[in-house]
Length: 366
Ligand SMILES: Cc1cc2nc3c(=O)[nH]c(=O)nc-3n(C[C@H](O)[C@H](O)[C@H](O)COP(=O)(O)O)c2cc1C
Ligand code: SF4
Image (cartoon, rainbow, N blue to C red; front, side):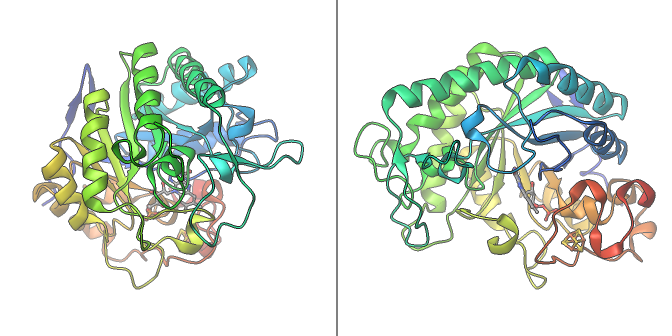
């Protein structure tokens, strides 16, 4: 009997109808300017209709230099507002709360006009061979203003919450890892584990959109020698909580390329929810609501993790891509028993088109 996964949760003045979130892998459905298309609207409406409590819309680039992939969703141009508003309307109509992730790719951004990318400083990580220019204080101030403008746009479009992306190789994570932040100023690792940049971003988002729930996607460990440890991530999170983060959305790994190819939760043989034990320690120490991400597996596993206080919520990316009926199986476990689990293929690019392994479009699995 599933009960914890299906129990509602009060998020300020909003109610989440259950503990399931659709995670935000990019749908790759925007046009080449990052504008929402009919495919984008269709994709998010269908995600909402799966029965999740909230849909986190893919990382929206907070400036032209923040984009890290082709067809990256834009949240800066006034032209983007009608499309974003359509997304919130369709997600709500589908029965879920609309949340949007704010993203800056830092040195993982696509070079603009052939210029070298910017990051916190020269990375210590040997596998990063690109030449990276350190951000000046003026540039950092501008990026913080970009977060504020993007948050206002999210508010105007009708989102219920904002997620600050500080994991998955984003600029905020680049500041938080000793492997990618070599600065010796106040933005450096020696000052509260490099938390200053993310703290400023949280502060500015909270100040312009105080009524929106603020989520933070954060990595609990770099999983690389010399990288951020669980202990350090917990110390940072306590600071972020003080700044106003309402819910942490946790993952692991310092990802500096395609997450599919190097993420530890990717392998077929990884156990169900491989990050859950670290998440439990993180949650106990930080004393704050937490979304667990990564190979959640069966609805019974998700329910168990919530009931046993490993987490408060779960989020699914490929899990729902493979099985759009997953949230409904939580209501009827017999339906789930004969479903094939996600195979954790090395290449899974077209979230909007459904699991390519099944050769069935997302729309038709439902
Ligand atoms: C191709 C790909 C790209 C992703 N990009 C993002 C991203 O930009 N932001 C993010 O928060 N998560 C991203 N993720 C992670 C997912 O949101 C999710 O947390 C992860 O896939 C674990 O869930 P799953 O095991 O159900 O796939 C990405 C995942 C994949 C597969
Ligand atoms: S292609 Fe299908 S089976 Fe493979 S990782 Fe993606 S969702 Fe899972």
